[in-house]
Length: 187
Image 1 (cartoon, rainbow, N blue to C red):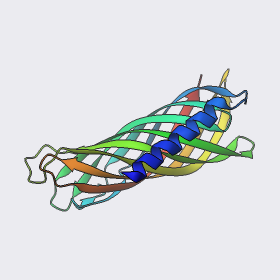
Image 2 (cartoon, rainbow, N blue to C red; image 1 turned 60 degrees about the vertical axis):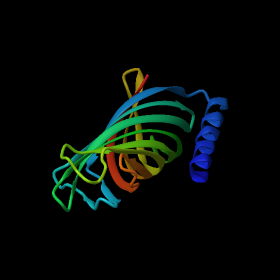
Image 3 (spheres, one colour; image 1 turned 180 degrees about the vertical axis):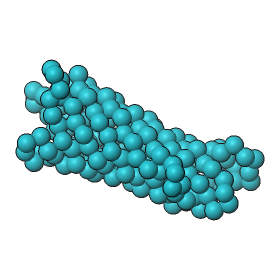
Image 4 (cartoon, rainbow, N blue to C red; image 1 turned 45 degrees about the horizontal axis):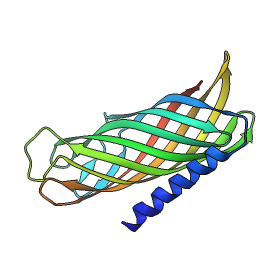
C-alpha cells in the first residue's frame, strides 16, 4: 500500500536525522505506560471494557529532541455480542520533543505497528487476525534527575489504524484511540 510505504519512509527519515544529530544528550531509556482500554472502532463492533486496562513496555534511544521508540503492549476489548478480544500491539515510532522549559516538553510521534486480535471462543469472524498499520501520537512530558540519570513522567494520546487479515479472508478495519500515563528511566 502507498500509505504504508510513505509511513516507512517517514520513520526512516526521522531515524536518520536523529542518528546524525550532533547534540550531546543521547541515551537509551526504558519505560512502562498504563491506561484504560482504548476506544476501538472496527467491523467487529468492539466496545471499551470499563474495567479493562492497557499496558505498554517501552525501549527507546534519544539524541537531543529526537528519539526512536519501540513499544509492546496489550489490552482487552469487549464486544456487543459479549465476546472478549485480546489485542497485542508491537510498534516502532519516531518521536520529537519540543522543550518548553523547566523540564517540561510536548512531543509528537509517528510510526508503524503490528496488531494481533484474537479471542478464545470459536467464531465465524475468522479470528485470530493480524495486520500492520500506522500510528500517530502526541503528549506532554516532564523530565527530572534521579541520582545520576534522568527520568520522565508522560501522558500520551495515540491513534492507531490498521487493516487486519483474518483466516477466512474477511479483512477487519481496526483503529484505536488510547490514553497512556507512563514513566521512563534513562541510562
